Image 1 (spheres, rainbow, N blue to C red):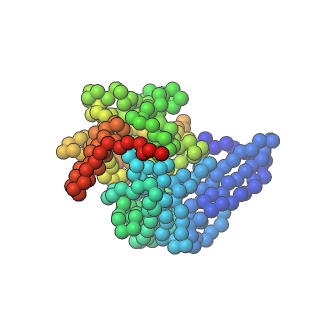
Image 2 (spheres, rainbow, N blue to C red; image 1 turned 60 degrees about the horizontal axis):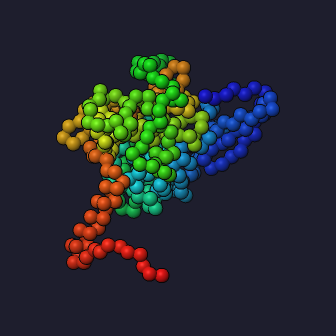
Image 3 (cartoon, rainbow, N blue to C red; image 1 turned 90 degrees about the vertical axis):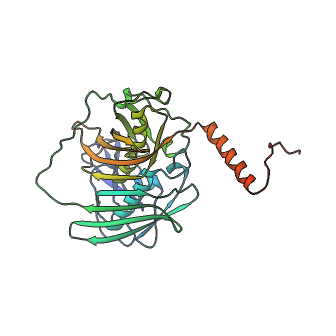
Length: 357
């Protein structure tokens, strides 16, 4: 939650991605980071802080490692382990989040809606180029797309609408699920392997309703999983790109619904932004609609941790169903694949032994 500072004289410290305001009042510092993605876009002009509410100690662009270039329509995303899954490939939510940050930075408008189609994998050490096209630019809305690729290999494509309109009425009919324990009262989600420095190691996840890995014994659930999540490096809030990262949890929910040690790879993700408010924790209310023909389908409602239970966004996904492998099984499978490849080439594989010094 943001803190009100009175009788303060702000000192503005500028950087390429954020404007940090340090307000001294009553002998205490209150730090607010004002995200200003539009004026920071290469070639953009403007003055004044774009957003008044407290947003983050680290903005999402910095969290993901997205970099502008001399061309305002091209951005670069170096793929590091910190934005990858335990399977050593770019996390789908991180890819969508980077595309949204690039689209907002180029168009200088807020995301209303975006949909991503995942086409291939990007691995650590590679660089994803994000090419933005502003297809239609109106007075209040922009229709745009971003193509994310490694060289000539397309990784994902994002279509989006961006803008803002003044309108006298608003309302919310989706509500926070009842009797949800607070994050500090909810058990931490235990991963099937050490998340280390992957994206999951950078997220704080707490089960308000869900089963640990050891409890997934094949018993079918009711299709509902409720998870508290936050990005600790972003202390005071989230933006649309951060919600793209946090909304990529339908595959996990499908495994919970089926009661299996599995989930899937996302085929797509459609994010609809409703209303952004300052929050630390985000409540993910995951609804699995159905699983058939090897594919799962579901929806996530994302609520702020505030007195109103503000619905900030929804994210809907389909995924390819897969079982999880234990790390030992994955290593064994990799060795078998290597042996099969060597055999096809007419060679042989022998047991590895230490070399004499």
